[in-house]
Image (cartoon, rainbow, N blue to C red; front, top):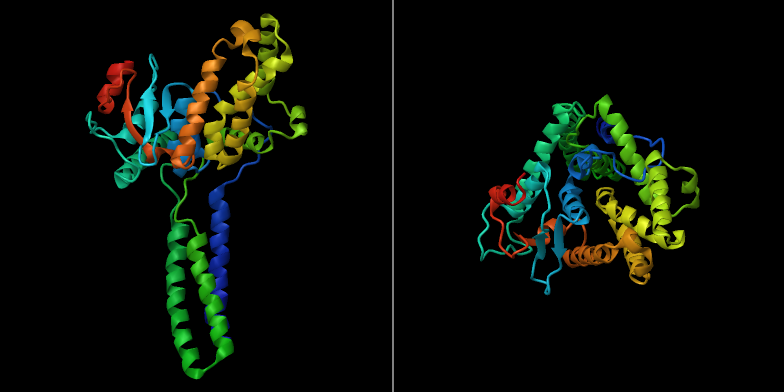
Length: 366
């Protein structure tokens, strides 16, 4: 019975597993960066970039952190484990339509002064709203010609159907080999069954197809990821991108105007750069390493005598304090990705709860 098992079970199982692995590679649509990048592409947004690198699950958390980094909202850690993360709209902040939609999704339209959402409440409703937001963002990318209108689904459907049919055949062989006490054939059948089950897990159910206009944007994001991974490697000094060169030139000019030593100004400029990249570290799954780096730089700035820098860093103390709040909130939430599930009501500077998207438009005149 071993020969029929090999021909009708093992060979088909291995074949569909190989096809599943090929589909996974094709779905990734990997790009190779041409140069290391030190900042997001001008005009991009965190949510759109999340979809361009297939980081949908991390998009909302990264976008909320981006709002905090831009000082449009303030994240405040709760005093207890059951108290949600506080989110406060900063005075005179101006939200884009996408940012207003994000806050509406995270907090919902049904705010009342006495309502506070706890860690585990409304998880399903929150997930549904985030899914709708990402779907709208995906439609926007399609309208801009960056992705195809429809996802690629036929490989996943075809291989999944074949896998289930294969499991039926393998189940019959398991019964037959047990009755015949043909142990080599039974072992071979179990191997085929394992390969068939693996096919279901490795084969992507669907994936978005990136069009040629998206290639440059995805290469830029790949270059940004390379910087996040290798930021401390000395050889990156040889790979300055145009934006990186401009950053260093601007920093040198500002230091000269302020009459301050470059050695003092450099940590501030580096801190600003790395803080702005924190949302992208979340997108790339590098938030733990980047948070550790940011904490070290935060402590370094906290020990620096900022008074010698004059107008160049007149607001740096506030920046350091704001970043400390952000780091504490992420830690209290249990991580950057878990942040959106741990937020409470959205309040304005006066402490009033913002009610729905109408409240956003009324406050910020968007």
